[in-house]
Length: 485
Image 1 (tube, rainbow, N blue to C red):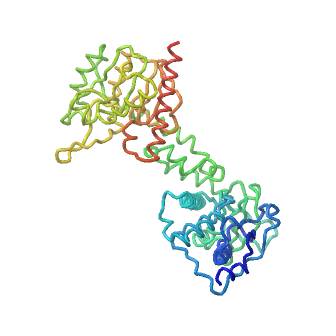
Image 2 (cartoon, rainbow, N blue to C red; image 1 turned 120 degrees about the vertical axis):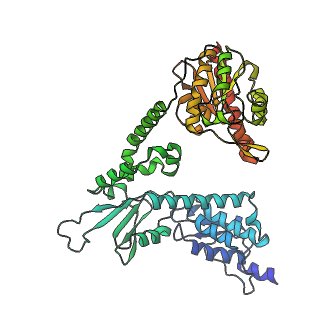
Image 3 (cartoon, rainbow, N blue to C red; image 1 turned 30 degrees about the horizontal axis):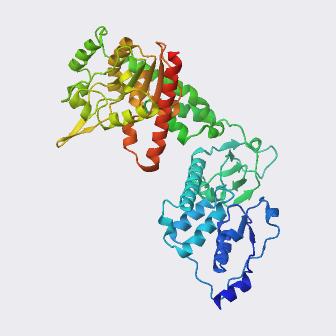
């Protein structure tokens, strides 16, 4: 009887078209989705069309919502699904509501499926949720209100009206109205976006139509004061350009008065950093003229705290006329004990990847930018610690001395510490890998990740980083062949 009653409401093969009144109307979707599940309409028989979508493709579909039978089953939806779904519904992906319905349908037979991190639908809804939360965070951080003077003769306009322009990637405007209403409760303000607009008069929130960038003001008298303040609090000692661009992408700069100062402030910070590095450089004697002399000198070096530890200096090894110099960070525990570079787990992994791409390690000069093992003692174990910028800069004397004698055509720096040892400044591996960097002596620097980084990963992350590492090594091999011609 249950099946017969259900088919009275849902004809066999009926295709349902659900036209959403608003692109962010999660409540409407939830109501329709519940009825469709109760009528046992599978996901492949439902088309979700948001405003502006092409409903003509489904012209023959049933547009009336099915009526659940009186004894329809209760629809299951756990808290995790509902939390993710509310945010995912705000995403700009046109397939988002179909995804939500597919998940809701599957939850009815598998209530714990949201715990399966490997499920493609679960991963996708988590991705949509993350994108929407990030877009909301950017809106909170980068909306800049500008003062608009009332038009002459308009006595009803507020004395101080503030207008901001923002370009959200998703349908987050209405969802974030409360945040700005609470934060700027005593201001008359408007937020204009290509997806719609919000207007607050200290008592009532109104929605408006989409706007254009030209509808928003270009600046106001207070911006000069704000730029002066921003310049005064800009901290060059904490400057990380890659992290800054990740958190404050360039697409938002045009709406932020302080952004015009960033290139000049960054350049000034880098100049001051180089000056501080140069000023802090220790005095050394004349450069050793042989690799043997360098080996003897680094064993006696105590110019930084690492040399004071219970360890031994580890000299580079390989042909004195090698075309390729491979540079790591520092010796590890195994390297310190054996007195040779890259003989521990990271070195063994490096050998595997070099062999895979066809580079003979014996033809390369292998060394480290820092010559002593930096560690902290934990019982009988010595735990690796990364060298600091000052320690790397101090050891540049030795790595530059090795370069001067070996005179490689190409240098492969593995890891951020090795790159700093070559360049005298910190760079982002993801930004510079895969492309040659010309050095002052005519050689080329190529930067990649350190093998120890791969050892710390597992699963898909390790596979992806191993693929990138192999690609970098292959590019180095091809470039070496070109230089040899």
